Amino acid sequence: MKDLTIKNILEVTKGKLLVGNEEYICKNYSKDTRIIKKEDCYIGIKGENFDGNMFWEKALENGASTVIVQNVEIEAGKLKKWSNKNIIKVENTLEALYEIARYKRNLYDIPIIAITGSVGKTSTKDIVANVVSKKYKTLKTEGNNNNNIGLPFTILKMKDEEAVVLEMGMNHFGEISLLASIANPNICIITNIGTSHIGNLGSRENILKAKLEILEGSKKRAVIINNDNDLLHKWYEENKEKYNIKTYSIKEKSDVMAKNIDLKEQSSNFTCKINGKEEKITVPVGGEHFILNSLCAITVGEVLGIENKKIIEGIEKFELTKKRMDIYDLKEGIKIINDAYNASLESMKASLKVLSKFNENRKIAVLGDMFELGDYAEEIHKKVGEEVAKNNVDILITSGKNSKYIAETAEKELKKENIYYLENKEEIEKLLQKIVKPGDVILFKASNGMKFYEIAERMINLWKRKN
Image (cartoon, rainbow, N blue to C red):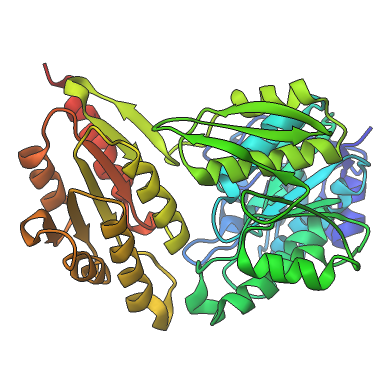
């Protein structure tokens, strides 16, 4: 039995049972009264704009068996009303969530795979989980629930799984350290060190330092890194005797390498030695970065002893989380690349490179601001403008405070009449409806807060309806 009792929860949280049964077993957990299911344990989380503790009674009304709350005074009449339920009061519900998740995780002696990096965490998680699932029943982080709330709730979903693949995100020092202390992973992956959140951390070297918090706690963990990344390669050379490090790459000599690469519009082929045998692999998504993701998954497969044909099947049949390099073939030969969930210099480069592979079409890039760059914002947006020019974009459309720097830099190579700097999403939509021709390929890319995925979705609906 790996489900927790109320007694277990009280012990790890040092909470007080106001009413209820210590022997009751809690199987499922939720923080949202709108989607809570019967018998769920509701944990009231206090956010910046709301306090989930205020909705404890709504949770019980909607079917929860148990609520865990802080800073709530419950009168005797209400305790009597809910005497058939479990009400636990703790000092801090967020800390309680962490402790419950730690306890739950430590009940399992299975592969716990944690993935971090500046870009590519979610797509790497998707492909790694698909490979691992070919041998083990696998739980993975859903969507982008990679923070101090999403990760522990993912761990609390563990039932009879044989492996878990977790994504770990961060904006500041100490955040990965917390996540690693909860998940206690035995396989750690760092995809790359780029410029995401450089405004918060000050330098790429500090970003590396923050990502390396994933290794805190045990030097016995297997560490898997992208050896083509300059800072990770340097770290590997300095630490290869200290840690159990496995490397993958396209360029640098590594444990797992891709050769004979054939990049296409919407897929790629390459060869690679897997468990000592040369194999041919097809990746069902375009872009060199997805070859790196595949190499990472191959490395995980080797570490876990998964047979070659299962590793290959896992790569060739994986599906991406939505809004990440989604390619839509629409009427009149129009194609939309919706990669607008998030953006950094590195992911902008990768997406523009994918766009450049559509050689027979006009290439339109709709680009918005990248966030959390601080004093580096102008410099990094200008570098994106250079990438636009390098990748033979025909028409550039930009919007956002710092995207003007993309447009200004691209103007050195592109004709001025093919560059647009617009005020808002509505203007972008109007322009696209006016200028898009049959056969055009349009890339949407910006930080999530720009909500460019909304434009992409509306354009997809519009052009699907065209006769």
